[in-house]
Image (tube, rainbow, N blue to C red; front, side):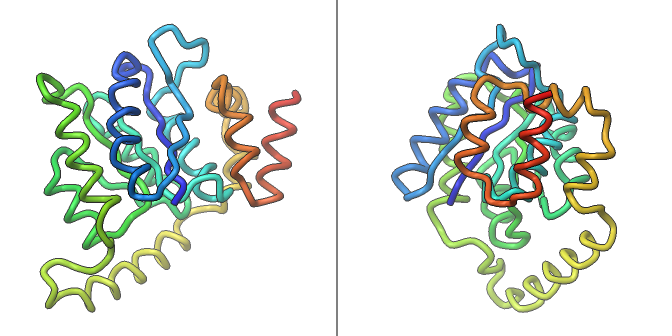
Amino acid sequence: MKIALIIENSQAAKSKTVYNALKTVAEPAGHSVSHYGMYGTDDDASLTYVMNGLLAGLLINSGAADFIVTGCGTGMGSMLACNAMPNVVCGLVIDPTDAFLFGQINDGNAISMPYAKGFGWAAELNLQDCYRKLFEIERGVGYPKERAEIMAKNRNIFSEVKSTATNDMLSILKSVDQDLLKSAIAGEEFEKLFLANATDEALIAHVKNLLAA
């Protein structure tokens, strides 16, 4: 599975801690991790939680990523922005129980974490425990087990409703403020990582045009 990490500007100082914790768990489990920024507080490209959502939508819908790990101060803004995008189902994860239940019940493809809340001593251990509940065990099995069938049914219904309620990603990219979009893809590693992993030709072409503009 291709996992993409996106860090919002107010929490950029914690980027290395989050990245290292994610790699420590995800890579031994057979997943790849691509860090789309921010990488530190002095990055030229600054990501807001709204940009986090746009990036999440672009990466998921283009095939560049299978799962998004993002967040902001409370985690709420990035979660809302991600869930505004087509085909992105993002949960708010604060602790390992949240991670386990989101993975088992909702089986989404993105999480948002509150990096300004409870991020003190041994914070990296909580991060690792959360990631283990997502990436080391099978997701979508259901919890409790006796409700697994109805949970799977509800996930499918939710996907259909979300598909009806949102535009396709290319239409969104063409409609949003183009300066906002260009800022979202301005990270120093974005172009290399995106072009190496994306598979949707229409989205790739649109992004290439934006990068060349």
